[in-house]
Amino acid sequence: MPFEWIAAMRFLAEGRMQTAFILVGAAIGVAVIVFLSAILTGMQQNIIRRSLLSQAHIVIQPAEEVARPQPRGVPGGGEVSVVQKRAQRLLSIDQWQKIVDEVRGVPGVKVVSPTVAGPAFALRGDASKSVSVNGIVPEEYNRIVPLPDKMVAGTWRLASTDVLVGDELAKDLGAGVGDKLRLATAAGSGVTLTITGIFDLGSRGVNERNAYVLLRTAQDLLNLPGGASAIDVTVDDVWAAEDVAQRITARVGLQADSWIRTNQQFFIALNAQTISNIVLRISVGVSVALGIASVLVVSVVQKSREIGILRAMGASRRQVMDVFLIQGGIVGLAGSFIGSAIAAVALRMFQGMLRNPDGTPLFLLPFDPRLVAWAAVIATLTGLAAAVTPARRAAKLDPVVAIRA
Image 1 (cartoon, rainbow, N blue to C red):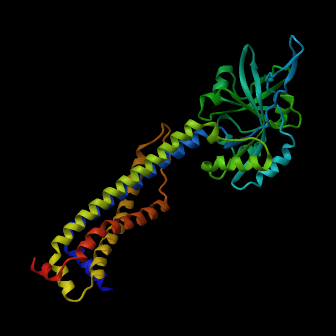
Image 2: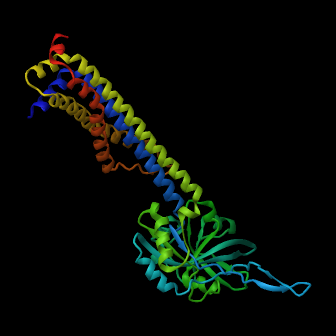
């Protein structure tokens, strides 16, 4: 081994108590960073997953109809332009099949599915509820909203005469699986369907409002033959949804609204949580660095005689400095592995305590190996940075003065 490594290892072995204190401090710091990062990441992923469970990451809709100015005569022979915004009708996206193919080619897009959505009334006996009818292509839409996994009654099945309703809507209508349900629109069209399944998407509003039918059934009911009122898109990275939406708009010329834009306050809250996580990591890292630096400074004072002897035997200032830098790096690296192991055990115990009433985990706590690798790198660099001042102080010691001390 090089001389610097031999001296560094010997110094660490001789000051066992100091080395233990440094290792414990570094390990606790890394454990806190890994543990809290995993918890905050798990909570954030759980919030996003639950919030986006019943909606697409991006929704492409047809352009709004623009009102045209209408000239109106006024006394004296003049004219003024009166603009009255017209009520928006349910419109189909022009050439939506071609747009679906183009959107699939946009980088970052994962799933694309056409839908027809519009208002209707759900009628059963004397009961009546205002609902949102969603016409879907099951094979594609299920990859956006996992309806088959959210069924609480009945089976996942959609034919031209079938309808899926939320559990709250079924309760309000007094309906169950196998019952008939009539969907009617304000325009006078209607269809009678059979309830084949009841779902629970974890949102009361969605469960009491949404009804899912086949795309063709919704087209006939909402008087939109062969059309699609929206195109739902999911992306590989939910945080990049707005960037992908802008690329879609640039390619197809239609407005694409991402979940980030439609849930601006929610996105701001998530960003604040991410910033808090970063600040916490930095604060703990600084605390660990100060602890390592303080112990190494004491080590320089205690080992000033040994440093003087090394200098008298021909060790250069650079070699003496490297001895303490190596100590800082070793302590940081070893502390990171010990801290990661402690965090892994703590996360397993914490997840075992947080359970839903049915025994399933409240939310998953990801133990990302990349986080451990980054913790090892950061802890090692922190140890090196903390050792700079003590190392420079040791390198500047005069050998004669140090030996006499």
